[in-house]
Length: 293
Image 1 (cartoon, rainbow, N blue to C red):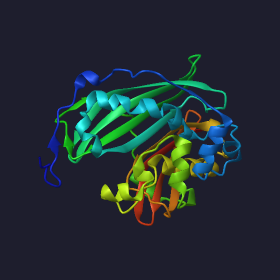
Image 2: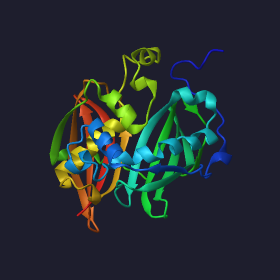
Image 3: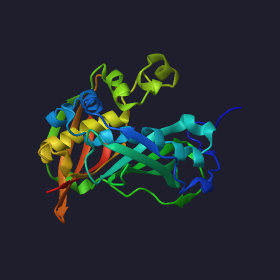
């Protein structure tokens, strides 16, 4: 059977009964070794992260990895999973993750929205300690390219759109970064993400890519330590929110820059907008960091 013509969306019926249904709980015990491995795999220069004393912010994806995609299957048919990409990620932090934490995570789809180039499903993820203490809440947007669900149903993730007026002023910081040629081979075991597009050259080429691609969350982790080192005194405990849109693919060997603008303050929290670029290409867009003063 032939697929839709290039640029033509395939109409697919999504299952609304899968919305607002929590997944089974996933449990994860945090160790200093795993925290330190993740920091090293993301070129994080912050000493406390490298020592495994406290986790960097994007490590929060590791304990929820098994739970986070299961609700998508409750809404979208399995035969379109080859078209899914990670569209956006938005972390809301109650506190930092520390070694010895026994974490419990669950996830649910809260809504989906048809767009001209595809359909986005929003997943809400809760992470708590086994004693019930809130650790973080996350919103993941899974985007199905050239799929038309024909409707917008339920809720979307909170917005974090970049204010273009900020470009009228210079960024408060610009951080140069480099994606190592072995980055994906270090990040995969540290994160628990074994997707072969990041590890197998032939699989990536068979998928129409020029070669293996970097993990989007690894690039997000790069941006997180850039923000923390430049505007938060390298203190992850001050970070309240960290959100991005994954705009373009990143490849091993890429040179990146993370640019940070101050976007305002209120109620003891300063908001920073940021983006990560490769030359003229924006690879992480609509970046937002909220940092307690």
